[in-house]
Image (cartoon, rainbow, N blue to C red; front, side, top):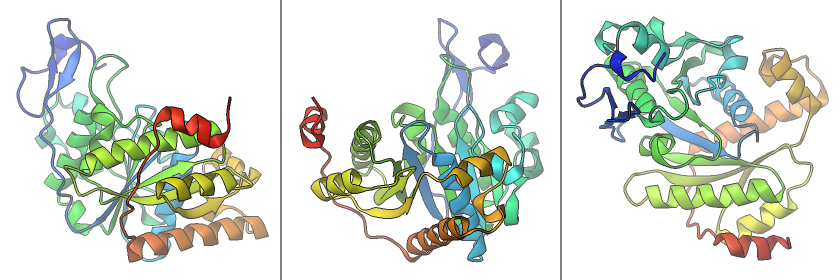
Length: 303
């Protein structure tokens, strides 16, 4: 188990480093070069449906004939659950098994085939309070480059933990071309979206990442999302209502593209395919002006 400082090698670039208190930190020397693939980072409030969105979007890209790699960036490591039908071992798991000697790993040690050929990787993360998730994401990208897997990929999707856009969990923004925010039509989700937009804007000063837009999820209406988007310069890319079939798809360890056809399933599939086509064609970067926290309360009319 990561977190025991004595089990890590001495500090050097790219390996975990315990400090004097025994807390593991990481020296990450990541960059933004992932190759020719189109790279997307998916963020949003915790529990908003980022993994469901990412997995179905991955399948949609694969249905368009694209070679897709989905990277889960959450210690919970369930991003690719519906694609692989199980919780696959994480990169941090397999690195620990070889005492953090990545040269001993093979692609099949950490890359798993998912539905319709989507390649699946779970970065994982150190136990709470013992390290930086950025090391894990960075090491994952290094391994993929080392084994030339990114050269054979058209689309990479980073599915990122909750609305955490600081420190290590902002690392995907160093690699992504476009960031997508998943939100619902409620105050908490929009508040988180605003904070995420601010963080992405800050990262865009040093990296190529830009905001692509917003996916409205688990919402019958989109009026508050649309009103906020118009005020700050965001745009809605897609809309997925709060459908019970989506909940049931996760219970069945399946994506929506594997569910029995019904009008609502086919409508959701079509919307994911439309979203994939929009993103593949390319989106103009948005000139976003996020609100201050206090202004959001006034704007959305909450006391």
